[in-house]
Length: 115
Length: 254
Image (cartoon, rainbow over all chains, first blue to last red; front, side, top):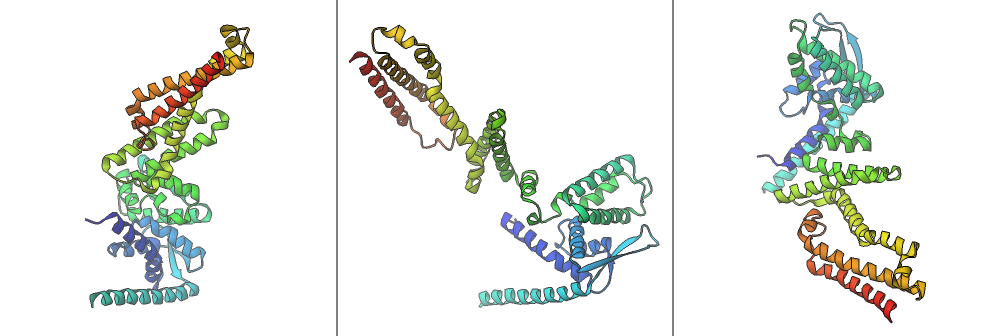
């Protein structure tokens, strides 16, 4: 049975990684909000509640990491699409590099322990 | 815009109101627009008017807006309120007790603050009892819970230490009752001092007897602050009373 410590740790970890996940989702193509939510929701254990993604998208927009544009949809209302700005793309590259280093470092520590 | 039933419309309006209360300014406008779009897409294909049960599923997945922002992005007062509203019970109750105690202090000048001390004490004391039942250490929460308990204990103990004697002293000294009653021929200051010391001394002895009789309920009411109190500690109050009574008698008879 998971402990309160474990629950808290995983929650904090997810919160910290959600921005990285959102930026990566936008790495290849522009997406509208609902689609971003759906894609991230499909990743097991990443999204705590779907609504948390929208304030993050709004903040990323204010910080000029993403930009938005409206596009009409044949099914339903016009959709607000998000795409990375050049600044966002550069920041994502740095964040991914940092994540790789972190991932390797933890892997290294775990290997050391296994010796 | 998708057509909602009356109850669904009401629920959605409430939800958006909570969203706007949690987020502020441009961010609230932006996020509200996104949430409206999200809901419309999620409910597309459901026959109109869409009922509250369908909307409820979508809002459930979106989660409560109050939990969307990380705690560090909230102003301090909202962090405290969020902890009270959403935190685990064992912190919520502690914050509630401390919040009532702060209100007690803030409203003291208006004369109604003191009324809030009793609920602050009751919530704090119930919380201590709950933890005791669970066998859980109180830890840092003591700083939130002990102040109202300590404040009420101090007020009651110090109030009863002198309070009941004050009317007697008012009559005896203020209206000259001691001097008239005891011996009008004797020095007024000596009579007043002697009878004051004797009255206080007698009351302290009586007070310590009452406290000794009610020792267990009093210690329970102010646990854990009085956990180390023993009946013999109350003898000190009797001793102080006896000394005061002795000084009074000496002034009156020697």
